[in-house]
View 1: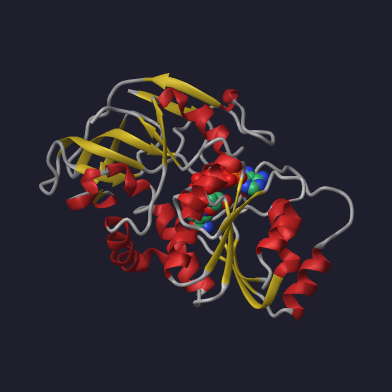
View 2 (view 1 turned 90 degrees about the vertical axis):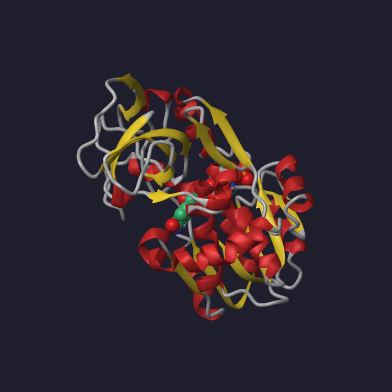
Length: 338
Ligand code: NDP
């Protein structure tokens, strides 16, 4: 049983030495438990927060403990009547080959999803759910409005933009590099996509939004938010989903305090900005998401690209890359053969 543990806490950007690969015995299930073999491990930006020893909406990963993570697994041994060896489940197995779970903590995967089990970690899983609820509940899209979303080729952003298109919005994506931008417009069907690494990014974004911005789905913060701020329309909505550009920041930088600029714009433009944590705020609305998203995915109206990396050993490097935009699509590690 291979497992990757948190060896030390990062000081700013995570490095490979923050992780350690260990091997050990395969655990044995007790009554009511399942032994699960990880097939796919989801890597997600929130894991950066769990590496810090700081208060958050979830406790940190302890030093020398297995890194947390959502997994699609197969039942290896079952001591619960509802599960049999070979069943596919969605669980929180973490960065390891085998995990124990109580039967009540896992969701059995059945039906069409078994054609693409890893989608339970992406478009039909937590990131898709995040995109859908943040957009529909906080963004409240209306036909004809302009929506901007960054990390547009990624797990959340790709779904936000495609659903906003289905709702009749004009959709402007922001992504890192020409290749991602081409994919976002040509395959995902966004109206425009702007490369945030271009030196004249703010100018290009303004040109792409001649009527201003009605919804800014916030995934990144940083320079993208700076460029969005002056373009916001009166009564704009900002679902505050993630701030990946800030996750490795250690301290607030010295210099001019720009908070009065932000609060001034929020006041004058009557902007509604709301943070949310998908599991905490919308767990009870999961069925609503599944009922909307499954048909869209089945009909090809919402697509998702997967960035599939082979082997558990490669998870630390892939995770560090995720925070730097090296992934292209939903980042998933294939841990075991199915
Ligand atoms: P992605 O698959 O989109 O991968 C992360 C992407 O972020 C990178 O590929 C990169 O894309 C972009 N990025 C990284 N650094 C920067 C930067 N400095 N400026 C601009 N873009 C940057 O990840 P997810 O879709 O899984 O997550 C997107 C966001 O949603 C994250 O902030 C995450 O924390 C948040 N989230 C929040 C949840 C909640 O409950 N609130 C739940 C799930 C996710 P590119 O190369 O295009 O710049």
